[in-house]
Structures are given as C-alpha cells and as structure tokens.
Length: 433
Length: 122
Image (cartoon, rainbow over all chains, first blue to last red; front, side, top):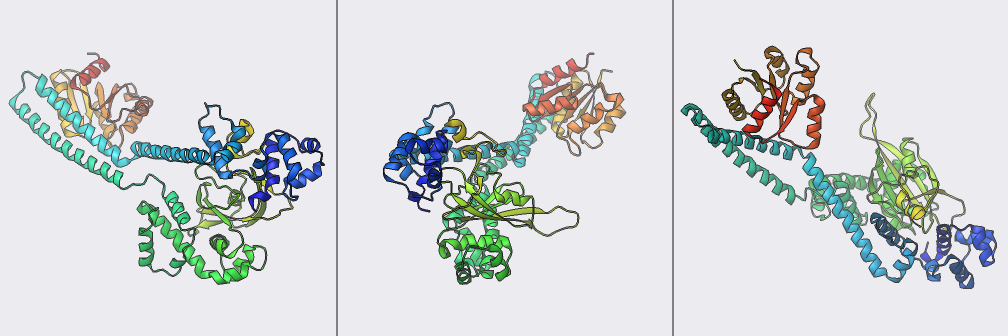
C-alpha cells in the first residue's frame, strides 16, 4: 500500500495519541463517526478542506497526515529518546522533526544504532573477560606463580640465617617459577592477540548470517546446484560472515534454501502463486514439501514473482529470533524481544499444527497481514526425549482489508497498544506522549 | 611441639615456601596436594588449622570445606582459604562454604603468618 493511501491510518494514530475519541473528532470536523471510521481504515480517500480541518483539530501539520515520515525512522528516534530518559525530548513533535529535518533525524537514528552496537560490543568483551575459561585458567596459573615467587623471594630477603641447602633450593625454585611465569605471560599475550584479530566475533554468528542474507536480498539462485567447493568458496567471500561459526551457520541455512529451490523451482512457483491468494498448504501438497520449506521458498521468491514481497521470521523454542526477512509495515525488532502476540509464538505451543491468523500491526500505518505459522521439531526424534523446535511465520501483506485483525506490535517499547497483558515494559507511545 | 597446620595446595613451590615460613615460626606443618581425598586426610590428622587452596585437582576447595563443615569433628576447625580470584562473589562463596578467613593470591609471607596466628591462638 502506497504511503499516500495511509492517511487514514495516520489520522487514527494521531487521534489516539491525542487521547481523543473517534466521535469527538468527527463532531469537531462536521462528519459522522462512521464516516471517520471508514477514513481511518483507509477505505475512503480524504483530502482538501476536511483533511485540513482534521489536522487543525489534531494540532498537526496537514502534510504530516498526508505524507507522514518514515515509520522506521520515527520508531528509532523514539527509542533513542527513551534511552536518554533524563532529557525532556518533545516526543509529541517527533513526526514534525523527522519531516522538517530528515537529514538530522537520520543522523540521530544512525548515532542511536551505532551506540547500540558499541554497547553490545562492550557487553560481549566484558562477558568474554568474565567467562572465558582459557583466560581464567591462564590468570590463575600466573597468579599462582607470582605467589610462589613472592613468597620465595620474601624468604630469601627476610630470613637472616638460612641453611645453604634451603637457600639453594629457593634459588632454584625462583628460577623455575620465573621461567614458567615468562612462558605463561607469552602464551596469554598470544591468546589475547589472536582473540582480538579473529574478530572472534564481536557480533553473534546469527547476526552475521542475517547481514549476509540481507546483503544478497535473500536470493542465492547461483547456489541451487552448487558443489561443496562452490558453496565453501561463496561463504568465504562473504564479508558479512566474520567467523567460522557464522560461515558454518550460513552454510546450513544456504543448503536448506538450495534444497527448497530444487523442490520448488522458480518458474513452477511463479505459475502456482499467480493463480490466486497465497495458499501455503496447497503449495506444500503440490510440491510434496513441508510447510516451513514452503514458507521459506515463498518469502525468498516473493520479491520476484509476487506484486508485493512477503516477510518471514523464524525462532527457536526460547523465542529467540534467528532469521528475519523484513516486510514493509511489519517491523521486526533487531535486538529487543518481539511481541508475544505474534502467531509465531502461539505456534510454539502447538507443534506441527499450522495456524493462520489475520493481524493488524499497531503503530503509524496500522497495516494488516495474513500470518501463517507452524512449529516443527529439529533433528531426529528420540524415545522419551523432548525435541527442540523451530517456529516459522510467513507474513503476507493484505491490501484493502475489511475484516479486523488481532492487534500485534513489533516490540513493547514502540507499541501503543493499551491494556496489553503481554506487555513487558512501558510503551514510549502510551507513557511518553 | 607447636600447633599443627595442614596445608592443602597443589603448587609445589608454594607448598615449600609456606611450609618453610610456618616451620620457622614454630608450627608443625603437614602437606597434601590433591582434592579428592583431602577430607579423609583432614579427619586423620585433625590439625589445629587447615590452609586450603580453592582450585585443587580432584575436588574444589569449596566442596572440601562444605564436607568438613558437615562433620562433627571438623565443623569448627579453622580454615584459611587461598584463591587466585579476589572478586566479591568468590569471597561470598568462601564465606557460605564456611571459611574462617579468605586470602587472595599473591599474598605476602607476613600476611599468611598473621592470619594463621590470628586463627589459632597459641
């Protein structure tokens, strides 16, 4: 949906932010509440004097309703403001700021992202220092040797009368311990140097894989029939993959995508999905593929074979997002935890039972999506051993929606939903405006 | 014969150095260098004080101390713990396990002597 067709959604969002009831706004601009409801759901176009009147009542620039500003940019600005809670930031004018000074707004957003990245780097380094077993063992050995040297040297220095036999023994001990200390110090320095060079990695392997996927726009047609050597060569040339762990993880994911592609070739997918609404179950039957495979394949080829791209998100049993193919209007949090209302997480509680759910994403655009989700076990099944699970969710944008969807957010911090039982932290929108 | 100290430590040169300074100060010093049978050795010797390293082969000093505190004969035995880690959580772990005193490496001879004298009154 083009942004200029979302004026109604922006009116609704501004009205909610202003704490105004639909009927009250309708009365103020001289229209019925039901007509305003149609406008707010983008089912009636709006412009001219009525739009100006609504803007005036809502105390915003008309252009903010008709054009808006980039939703992701505004969400990042809000997050940035929340992180510096001690400053009084004019959150209610964030749209105006992003609209009037897009360059400065983008700069703040970029700085915020960079700060987040640096904070994670610092946390990773601290974690490494605290938990690295090699480092802990090395330090313990060195301190033990320093203790022996200090104690022995103290005896030699402080004991006025010491038998030659003991003196010789302590001299020998000093010599041995100082040699061991020198060797341990060199080994420790070499280890720290290596750890620093390896980029060992300050980013998580999953993040590297995600970056690599996005750099390639999730398309790897050249690898569909790649040999092991060709696959390895490809992985080694990907600058986003900064560690062997990331390359291994990416290799597994790419091999899976290659298998999907061989089962569901591009042209056959093009023919099948052009026949009507997206029906993953029918596609799975037609190709003899699993639903997760169909979700992955649809998400990958949708940019080419469908009028609008589809999104995909995958998580493990802990709810950790492991793969994200974003789709416009359905923000996928990069670091913070996602909305627990996503069908993705509901599917975790009912493995192997696919579900389909219409959702409305809270926020500026209030767009609707048809979500298909399924959870499947990972690895071989063993008797009396609970399997691990991966859950997949295919995100299909819905044009001109007429039925209400379940409200879901991106992450609590930027979700305006009130009275949500799943809320983990206050919303910047509900509490800050 | 002076009061007795059992030193449980796996680094030979530290054993030698501490044994020397304690012996010179009049203590009867026995040593042991692994963790897995350390509790039995303490029970056999029943010294006036145990100096116990945290990181030992076979069993950690914390586990040894917990077992000693569960035994009637060693419940109140003074134990000086030695460790290369001086973080607050390590000190707390030592206290929870029942350490009488906690000393971080590298320590000086004078500090060891002072601690031993304080823990065992002649």
